[in-house]
Length: 475
Image (cartoon, rainbow, N blue to C red; front, side):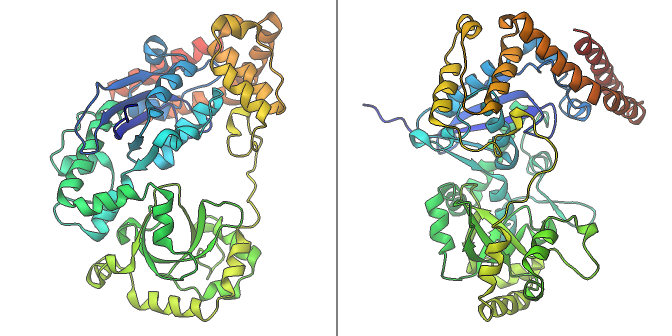
């Protein structure tokens, strides 16, 4: 049997909004390369039709230029759209990669798979498959090995890691930012730039897509300081700090609790568990006077985190970035003298912070619990049904949430299969959505029209959104 050569599938989504759980994809682009970043496939590109129980965010359409009318004309129904993508993602030995995809594009993939009865996670690990994200490698390059790349700074001397700015500074062709295909080519070129300038750094970061490699670096129980690169640290600091892994997350085997050694840890001794938890999730502006956000965070070993030996960040570079070596030593000593903090900080994460507000069935990817064997079996059957079989297929889910999702799946992807009773139910759902959202939507369109009154292109898009609103609420 021929072994399939490992490959990288570079990809990007454009979407009709910023929330992967509630918004919808509008465009997908992907290109496959070998591990040396040579292109080995034709580009893949698909558009996705918006469902008729949803209003695309005007702000997103202004950024991408993709209107719902264009997506309806050129796009697939969402179940076919995600099926096309999944066929590429799950080819053996494929590593799916992008720019900021762990936080955004991969969430779009997961929620879209979930809404369409596919397993949301299998493609990330099955058949030798994996995922990677180069945004933290770019940040690591700036923080640890900045030479050989042109970096971009704002008026306050804060580095920017926006793809369109970095490509411009490094003379990389990026024809149209926020067009998925253009962004994919730009991402590959950025990766190539770093691979050529710093091959060891590239290889090191690439290997951290494997959980076991991350575990090897973390060395849980050794209480050894490490360098960590994360967008949660200030960009002025190179998104970089010294951290100390202190404990496994009590309920999530893929998460590790760490403290930021660049901050004063003494507050963690005086605050109780409830206070630490509360302040951890309170907006900075709402924190009580004299209280700083607790210097703790989670590292998810399945999200390609950048962690490395403390010596990787030289003392000279740490000083340039504003990472205070003296403070880090003091924090380290304070922790080692107060190891009871391990138990305390583990308890902080032992109770989940409940999300407020009622969730729609398609939003329950993370809150709906694990599906039963029966529900998994039926979900798999659904993805293999023809339109003719959809019409007569009877579901018997253990999870009532999936019953609701099934009805919506049919209505969105196979409207012609709905019975009269199902159509009435669907229209009641749509009516409730529009009653809740239309007034605010019109106000946003009007506000944006004032803001962009001198931009003909944007005004044309806003007018199309107004026409679409009228169309979708009357059909």
